[in-house]
Length: 289
Image (cartoon, rainbow, N blue to C red):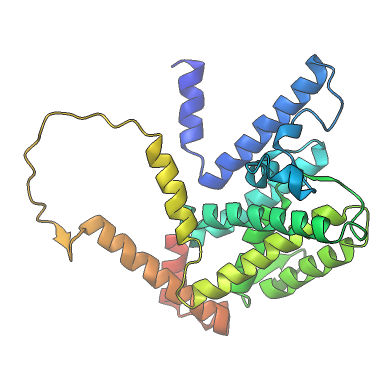
């Protein structure tokens, strides 16, 4: 097996959020190499992908509303963002599907970026530090606050005691608000934007409305546009007798499984994990494996 094949096999086994971590690390290394090999000043090697605070600069490179979330210059910045993303991803993907994770991640980045640009453009006399935005913090905040809002009474281990998720989420948001008066006011604006998106997404999803479906269809459409379609010879189509209600049996079973998970998570959010029956706990455990 060649090195490239081995690398492809390893990448194929990563979940979607781990792949995002890999992309962030690769871009960080590219930025370092540009700085070392081309004598580029620190924190300017990937300026084309940074999000500017001025709206007139933003409209000439609109892609920056997403690309900024993949740019890191400081080692500790990317280290803590990726550690957070990895830990949150393990919990998130045990309970929800990968497409939901991607919707929240990218919409969180967009919401954080839009709040950053809006506040700097409307109140330039207030927000004077930092004229560009980089980092995945807003997207990571969106995933974290989504979990805290969707199942607020779920307890997580925090050092030597258990802590309800909504306590943890509230503490994070309070720190971000306090941070608005510090040297990283722009970064904290983005954090708050991502947190607001995550909270709103969770509240709407608990009501049965997925606000990310439109974004998901847009991304699917873009992905399908770049796929090469090869026309083959006409094939005889045989009716699949193993369908239930027009769906393949596997898809139907997966749909029922996800609905049962949603019901259990709703029960956790209202009454806590201890309210689950032994059967429900066992089902949730097996679903997360």
